[in-house]
Image 1 (spheres, helix red, strand yellow):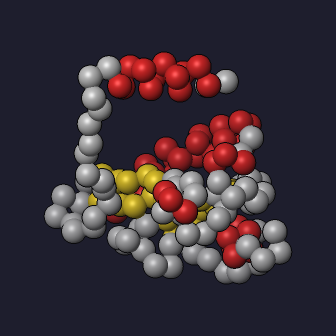
Image 2 (tube, rainbow, N blue to C red):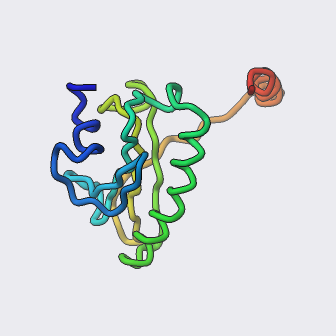
Image 3 (cartoon, one colour):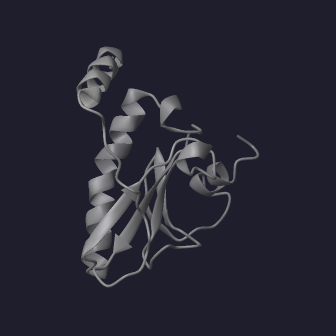
Length: 137
């Protein structure tokens, strides 16, 4: 897409601090990091979100995730890492081009990425799981 900033970055039209690249993705350091070493995996072929991604590309992307995460962890010596992928405005997506965040975490940091745990009524989880399972293709 001509107007997509992440397409331009992923395809090298806009300079970035690139840490990995192949024919389908580019991984860059985020210019507004939640923590030092915060990186973003960008797909080169535009897809707004995971729902628009074909299975072959998804497999390729997710085969790269552990490699990048491990490299960041080894370089920074962080205690853990959030690996996030938001789909849609309601989920916190602000740039509508598929991307995956790698956010290094330390036991002493103050980064707040989380949610308030909820619960299910008696039998609700089993019923929901069954209905969702029927839709998995």
